[in-house]
Length: 112
Picture 1 (tube, rainbow, N blue to C red):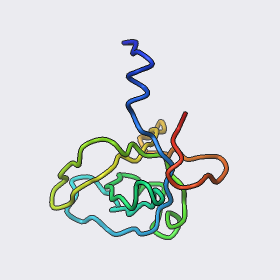
Picture 2 (picture 1 turned 180 degrees about the vertical axis):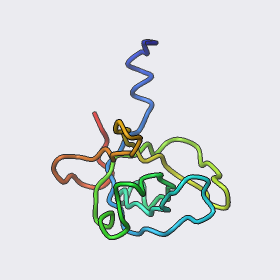
Picture 3 (picture 1 turned 90 degrees about the vertical axis):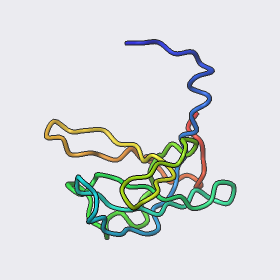
Picture 4 (picture 1 turned 60 degrees about the horizontal axis):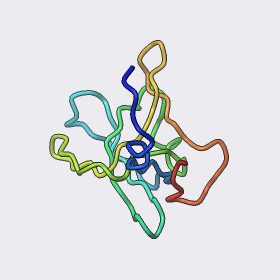
């Protein structure tokens, strides 16, 4: 495993945000949702594509807090422009489990 410096980690802005809208993404190569996530006043609302359909239905995602990298450059995913990277971890079966705070925190709170 390659070690990084503390300054490398400090450059990554991992922030909490609340999912406020979810849409189907039929053009995606792998099943995915298009998410709108509220990161609070300072960051605003960002969009992301997330391959989390195995474990999460549209209704269960609305209002859920997630952790996302908000300072990556935008990325074109088919016809959709992703503005942040929602974080998750794969289970043994490959399904992605979202990373989220165990207790609610203000939107935009940065991981420290």
